Image (cartoon, rainbow, N blue to C red):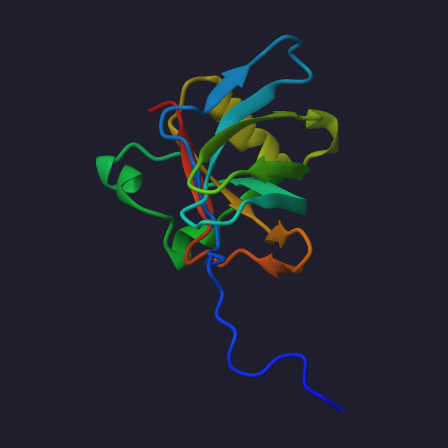
Length: 167
């Protein structure tokens, strides 16, 4: 039998994980109905690679941290001690977002909160947030990126995605 191919193959394009963040200054509260306030923020997805991908997630959670007033809180992700105080206020999915090679895409997320279903501690944080207290939030869960025809991979995130309402 004669070989069809001999030698080595080398990929021409690199598959690089996308970068995810919450757009600074994008977090807002919206109150259309007093019993169902909404939280709005924008996710920024950046593809530094040479291959287009789709980014998606299922079962992401949004948690509010204790209200704070110090400027140091804006400087980085919440500490482990701060994360122990998180009150979950909702869950959401991110449907597949096409992310072309070298592109940055922004995706708005709006979560309507059902205050009657939240625990008392979470309701207190939402009430403080709606009253104007600066409040940071974290998004936890697993994001995936799909390279069509190859495979799906988990997006490595060093720290949780986080942002701040009222700053």
